[in-house]
Length: 274
Image 1: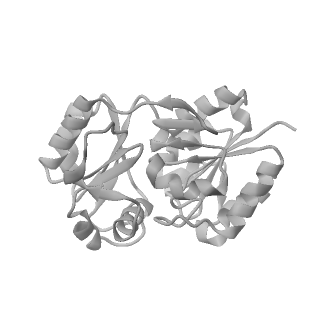
Image 2: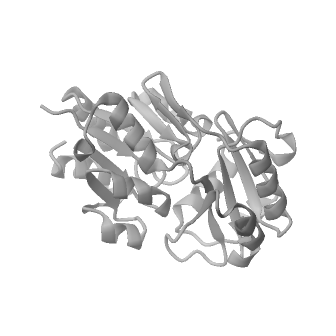
């Protein structure tokens, strides 16, 4: 049997947004496909620190920080933080226009202290907003921005009320970074998304894993729900979008499976013979 590589997004796909508890059905499906010789990777915008609670479930590796940090088992095969100059330009140009920022290193995250108050005024429905709302209320280790100690940063999560607030940052960094903005559901007057280095994305992270393991891309499967899964969906041999996912993603995915809270992942594995 040809080995299959499965790449699974976390928030809104493996777990309900902002949690770290996959449904029992998903864990059973992952174990069964691994017993067949297939490998399952977390493929996420989360940094290593935020996804650590899920590592106990025995994944075969990670494509983390939206592709900026890639591991196969215990081997780091790609590591690409932004430069200090890029980081400083991003922080200055975003804060200048009232954009809320969270900096993500591999092993820590630092957010603007008043982001929690901002999120309280937003509606439900966006998986990224829900993740940050719950992260701030719970304990995913997000520290106050003032405690940031200068370690390398892979990604900046941004939230604001108007896209125009991003204009200066786009002018200065648009040639180097994608501004990946969410389109999942109507969510009041909140614009949210991420600055992701154009040197990497989830799709290219998947290619690195497949090449490292000598597995053809036609034997790769991707499961996601939001627009930061776009490159994953475009890259893998077979793409799956959750029913709770972004409408543009559903239109281009090979399969649309039930929602995360309806055993969607397990049902997709079964449908695809994994």
